[in-house]
Length: 31
Image 1 (cartoon, rainbow, N blue to C red):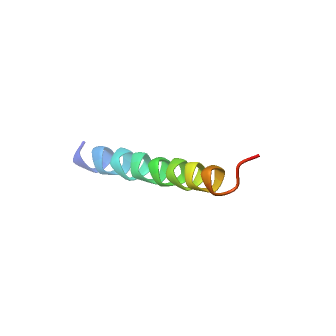
Image 2 (image 1 turned 60 degrees about the vertical axis):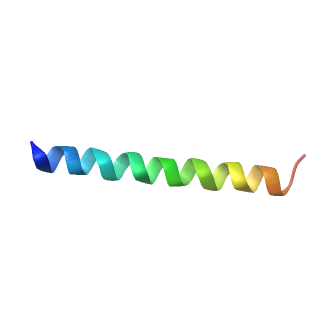
């Protein structure tokens, strides 16, 4: 169970990083 939680935590962090990168890219070059 603890392992599953860690795995989910890593996934959430991974997705959060992708979203942050996406937002940064969009704000750097607006259309």
